[in-house]
Length: 211
Image 1 (tube, rainbow, N blue to C red):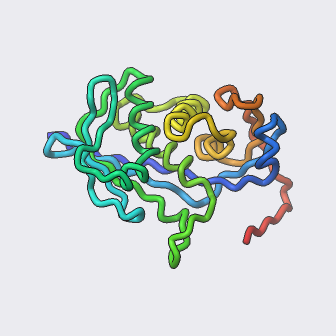
Image 2 (tube, helix red, strand yellow; image 1 turned 135 degrees about the vertical axis):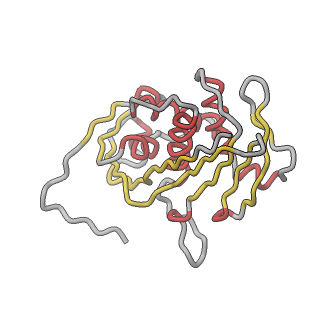
């Protein structure tokens, strides 16, 4: 019996410069931060698939993988499906674009660190990007095809985001979650798949306080 379990984590982001200008081709500066999305994947003893996210109010939801890597939720209501749109996009992107197979497994998604504890309001620190990176990294590791190149992981997550929300956004949040550290990020307008990403060293005595 397969009893394998893995945990995959990815950081959120804080855009320091160029949040909107980057969409027009200007460089942006983004930093990965110590707010993480965590994905726990374990072999399903019943030979089935399920996903849950207690922080989002999602109880265990069974899902099926159809031929061609398509995911379906036969028992899930529309509102919950919408909450799982990035999960679905990551699964389909991984299975349809790469030669991997995902064995029956259970997913536990944790994004609590991206919300105010008392109100549940989002902090705006890139929870969707962090979750996508943690998911894809975990899926490929669980399928015994771990990413060896962080840039390839970034590109895979960009394509997954295309599936979830269309060709919107610059991808700067995805870069921070995939690569980490402080980055200079630049794209030709509408082309994050070929982004120029360079690590930056902040001044040694720089102190930042974000409120």
